[in-house]
Length: 81
Image 1 (cartoon, rainbow, N blue to C red):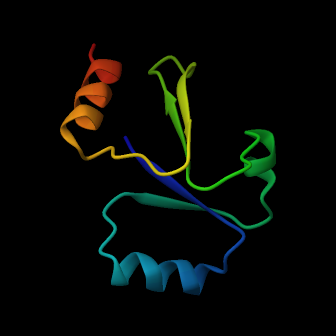
Image 2: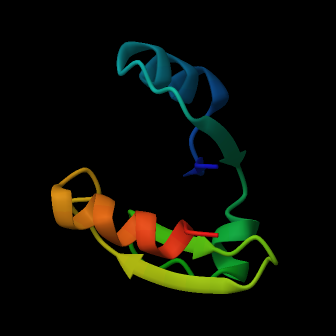
């Protein structure tokens, strides 16, 4: 499952952006940045890969080519059962 977390932006602005960009993943709002602080997010985007057991599998800072062939291969390997 993919969940995007928006930090400190108003719901109407986020909703407009989600609709305009046809975002198909769930988007959670972190209005006061409490979650960002807990996860020590210092740059956006920050990607966390969390295993089915809830353990952190990986973390990437900045933009990555997740939809490229190597990016997809990495995600497949990390999410294999």
